[in-house]
Length: 180
Image (tube, rainbow, N blue to C red):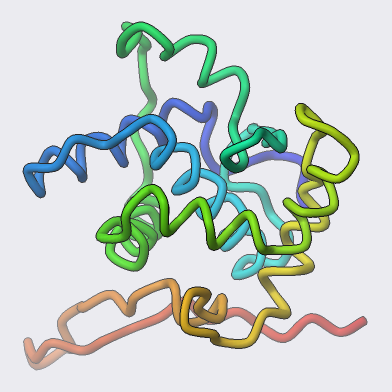
């Protein structure tokens, strides 16, 4: 695992999801935001060799995983936080998470992640237990497609770029296989 997350704060991802929801004329419920952030952290680690998307921890709460610092700060309203720019690759990743999971209800997302081993293991230890990042990465990297959970490689949409002749071409990041 790389020690430096791609984003500086959890707010950069959170506000990006809030803005994506607003672009789709949707109010993003706080619990749905936490599920999307949880899935983004998990799938980023699964897709990018255990690297962290953001410096965030998630704890097991009754209704699903929550990032406690974000929850405390955003309980009343959106705080005034200075955000750093997000590079295009990371922005594309967050947009891929939104397109994959954003249309689901908070109930659906909560039910889905509450049935996944990283959450259930932490929840059995008690409300407020930290869900280890390594367990998120391990589970989401190994999951096979189900009705509610896509494989890690299916989450990131191909980017459309132009060939040297100007034709649109779908591209994905090249990630060499990890040798254990």
